Structures are given as structure tokens and as C-alpha cells.
Length: 181
Image (cartoon, rainbow, N blue to C red; front, side, top):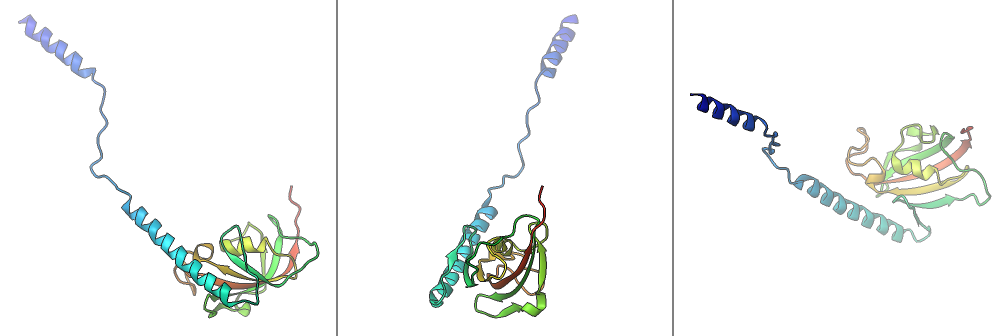
């Protein structure tokens, strides 16, 4: 009678020493949604770039510059002398308008200008924020922004819809430098 109890205790002690095993997930995600989204964005970017290139070709009077940030711009008024450009925390006073690539006005100068913007400390869409850093006081520049540099997928929840590339004419009136420590 002692043997079955000893065998049972021995078996119980061996079984209790087993380490826990990881459970397998019930469902496996393939990432197909993300892959499809990436492909849609690549195609959208390609179409927008083609539209912008057509605008640039049609405007033979202007010399457009491709920025490192992924937008294009041309100077309407260029200041040749060395003056300041905006850095982090500087206050930029500027006028601008927002149009579709076909030239339809979304926001006029009167709707949104003049505007004071504290560089990189306030909300402003990516392309315009990067464009202001290139400008000097007194300059007027026309920017062509693909939608991912403008308001992107969400738009501005007012007049600018989903994935709309933009054309903006911007004039920097002044740049007030701040002390950066």
C-alpha cells in the first residue's frame, strides 16, 4: 500500500516541476491592411507629384525649386541681401492664402492674414512651417505642397478635405528674433 502512494507522490512532484508553456494566439494578423495602406499612399503621392510637375512645366516663367522636405517653391519676390531667417522660437509675421492646385481659393489673405507664428511652438501644417524657415522678411514665395506636407488624410476639418495638395502664396512681413539659450 505504501508503494502506490510513493509512486503517486513521485509522479506529482515530477509533474509540478514542469515550466509553464506560452499560449499561442488564437488569431494571426498578416499586416495586409497596413500593406494596402502603404500601397495606396504610394499611388496617391505619385499622382500628386505628377500634378505638381504639370503645374511647374506649364509655368515656364517661374523657376521652381524642389525642397529637401518634399515640396516645391518659387520666389515671387526674393531678397538677395543677407538678412535673418526664422529659427526656433522666433516670431514670424506673415500673410498667406491657400488654394487647390487648380487655383481655386480655399482661404484668402483676408480669411487668415496677417498672422503671427512662433516658430516650432505653435500648430501649423508641416509644409508651411518648413517653408517659413526658408524665407527672409520681405520675400513672397509660392509653395506647392503634396497632401502629406499639407493637411494630409484628415484635412483641416473645415474647408480642406482628405488628401488635398495645396498651393500657398506666402509673404513674410517680419521676423522677430528671440533669445534662445
